[in-house]
Image (tube, rainbow, N blue to C red):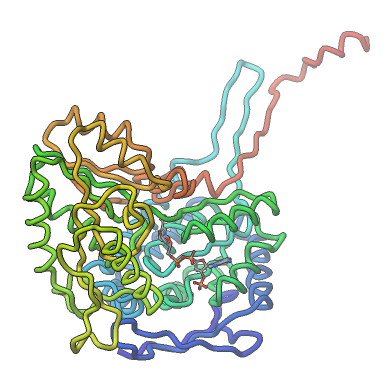
Length: 492
Ligand code: TAP
């Protein structure tokens, strides 16, 4: 499939980059060039922010009903074009089409969800007594800068755009250079629905375009998803501008299987937790803690599942694992496999690049299982961002919790057990933003998503994101004509 070429989406139109630069977007499964897109610079960011600022003049006062209708219209267009958008996303990101279809549908729902939230989470009125009331008005920040990574280009864009637009902001958003196509296509498809200047999509390197966005004084809020090191620098830039930031960063999530788990479900869940998105998922269940008495059985059965997973061409509906995003990611994953072997973990299966045709032009890797690892090994401490699971045995519930929490990250976790008391105990004691009981990866609209510790701060996918994109203004109203000031009596 040949996808159209795109410019930068500024003020409701596709425009060439000021410097005329373009970049080729590759299909990571085949190496084929999918499209050429404009490659922006600081001047283009300047144009985009100016357009976004101008759009604020009328959009910030748009009635809530009209704003909600716009969001519902975006949802409708996404649904009508779901197959098309999912195909573009699969070709561009290397993710199986079964996953990208889920992402696209989830984002249609996300726009509908925030259309609903917008109508109920309106300004508030407090009544203190018979003479005084207070209005709490919600106002947009103004121009919001959003930066997203390549692993969930459509989903993460939607999670940021829906609440930001719902709150009345205009947006300048930058997808990763590797995967700009689904967002550009969304901009094209919604060109008639979203007023010019409200949504601006800038393509270009993070070190140039991203930096220009987050250092511009006209930006009033920054939202970032990506790696922890870049996230830290984004947080520092936000502090310099004195604007709020939300940071969704990396993870090394613990998945705990107790001996009384619903075992078949737990095994499939553990495989899904790490292999979904080829493991290039911030909340991937990349450390699996297994109770010692079922440890050997779990490792053996998981290896069987891993060997049967259908690695394939991303747009094949039967494919369950596609390709990694690029050579850098492939090298990183294979390097961690070598480190794991050198550290003394047992490589049970996988660990190699898949090189036979039709995989020879892509970055396909075997589902990889390490057993007999310790929680101190590098492969258990650092984010590999690939389909590599590290299995570690434990003896007691407390030991499992202690090891799960003994990590810099705090994004997600899960446990598998039929004992609900134990499950809730563990959920309480785990230091993460998300936790699943007898499930993994489920995150429907309305459920807060985000981390703690080195996984960042802020929550998306939840109604609180509307407030995170809104400023509160307090208006105190006196309803009496009599003076209530203490000084009044002295003036008489
Ligand atoms: P990063 O290198 O951090 O890149 C993320 C985005 O930031 C890209 O658009 C990138 O642009 C841009 N960027 C890079 N350097 C920048 C800078 N100095 N200033 C401003 N922008 C900059 O991450 P990645 O390699 O794309 O993604 C993988 C990481 O993201 C993993 O650690 C993963 O855990 C994390 N992640 C977290 C979550 C959540 S929800 N917590 C979700 C997905 C991913 P270019 O790449 O185009 O140059």
